Every structure is written in C-alpha cells, then in structure tokens.
Length: 164
Image 1 (cartoon, one colour):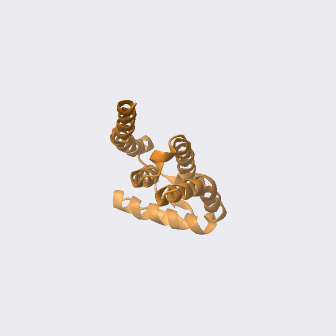
Image 2 (cartoon, one colour):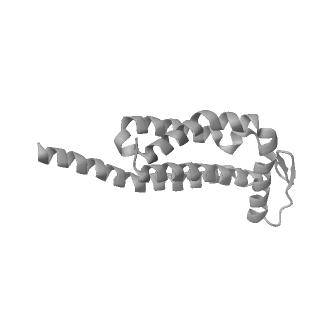
Image 3 (spheres, one colour):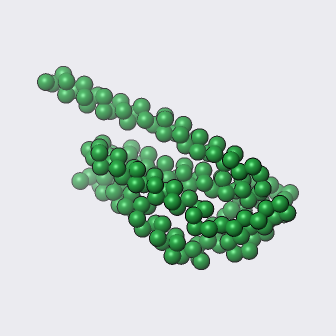
C-alpha cells in the first residue's frame, strides 16, 4: 500500500467514524470557539449590525441563532467521507495517488466552507438559502476535477486494448 493510500484511508475512517463522536463529546468546549468564529465572520459580513454571543448562541435584533453540533456540518462531512470511501474501495489503485488525497482534502474544505458560509448568512439574518451558492461552487470544483480522473481511466483502458 502506498503512503498516500494509507493516509487517505486513515482520513476517511477518521471523518466517517471518529470525528462526529469527538465533536459531539467535546461540544461544550469546541462549540463556543466555533460560534466565536461565526461571530467574527458575521461582523465582517455585516459590520453595522450588532451581534452578540452567549455560549453557543448568537443574538441580533432580527435573529436568535442557536448553534448545535449538527450545524457545524459534521454530518455532511461524514456522508461525504462514507461516499468517498465507497468510491475508494471500488477503484483502489486509482485512489492511492496523491491527486486523490488532494481532491478529498479539497472536498472536505469546500463542504465545511459552504456550511460555514450558510451559518454566517443565517447569523446576520439574511435569506439563508443563499448559502447554497457555496455548494454550487463545490459542484463546479467536482465537475472540473472529474474529467482529469476519467482521462486516466480511459487511457488505461486504451492501453489494455492496444496490448491485447
């Protein structure tokens, strides 16, 4: 097994099994930190709006936002990791390349960023489905990366056909 395959396997297992349990178990300590990050981003997005934090809640004139562990996108990262793990099992040789590790890490970052942006939009009291535009950016990222992955498979199939 290549080192990239081992790292990818460890990350997929961590984000699909251990990470949700760790976040849930340590939400009392980690939650206020996440909400503090949200508060800073909300102040950047709407500097004229007064937003205050109390524990894992944000308050403004028009919004009262309670942030739970499920709001952090942990479940979304878990589902992504499980689906990525299934694809990794189905195409194990291709999954051991460094590019696959970078795509997985990029996907995790894009999904977490999309969820964080959605939380910021909800925190400043705007229409929250606008946060889905970040998910659209992620879909464009995946669509741009897919031909590169498929090109390698088509080349291998062509090489097999030529050698037979």
